[in-house]
Amino acid sequence: YKQAFDVFKGGDNAKAREMFNKFTEQFPDSTLSANARYWIGETYYMEKNYEQAVLEFQRVIKEYPGNGKVPAAMLKQGLAFKELGDKKSARFIVKKLIENFPNAEEIPAAKELLQKLK
Image (cartoon, rainbow, N blue to C red):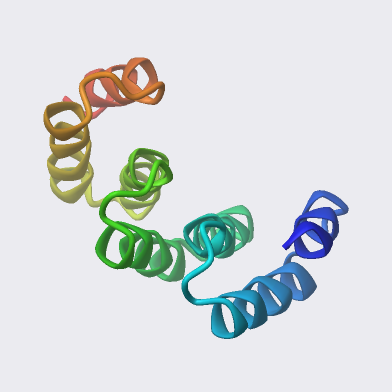
C-alpha cells in the first residue's frame, strides 16, 4: 500500500492504480483496502476520467460502508458528477453525505459544493 501511495504521490497515476488494484485483490480484508479503492478513484479523477472516478468512489461507498473513507468518496463523487454536468446527481450525493455524516471533516466542503450546485 505504501509503495502504491508513494507512486501516486510521485504522479504516476496509471502505475499507482495498478498497484492499488493488486493490493485490494491480495488483501481484500485489509483496513487499507477502502483507502486503496479511494485512491484508485482519485487517479481517475485527476485524469479527468470522471465517469470511471464516479464508479470507483461508488465502490468505496458500497463495499466499505462503515469505513472512514466513505465521506471523502461521496464528496469526490459529487465533484465528479459536477464535472460531468450532472448537477442533479451531484446534489443528491452531497445532500446524502451531509445527512449521513454530519460530523465528517468533509462537511464544510460539501456545504460549499451544494451552494455552487444551486
